[in-house]
Image (cartoon, rainbow, N blue to C red; front, side, top):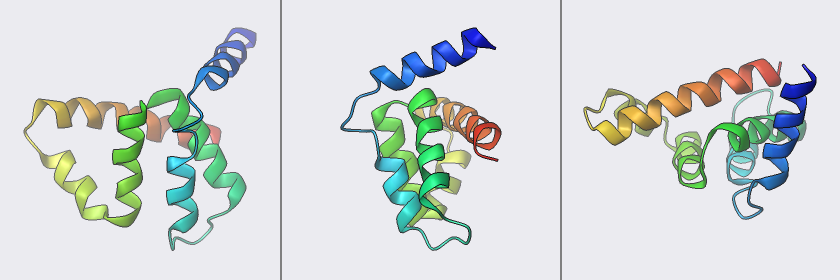
Length: 99
């Protein structure tokens, strides 16, 4: 457990500031019930651990356009399949961290 905590802290420390809040901002702007600064911040932390800046921008767009997520999930493009795998990892991480 100490190793996981250390790795998590190290990854958060090196994540670029410019991308540090794209998911959090999209989350806070969403009209979903239960949205809070602490929940959106936690989701952002999970994104910082699992998604690149480019991936975060794409994932943040799903808050505005949920159909886009569905289109990418169903796409046959290899890049979309690769992204979707990373996105699922992000979702699992956020779910575990942000209960």
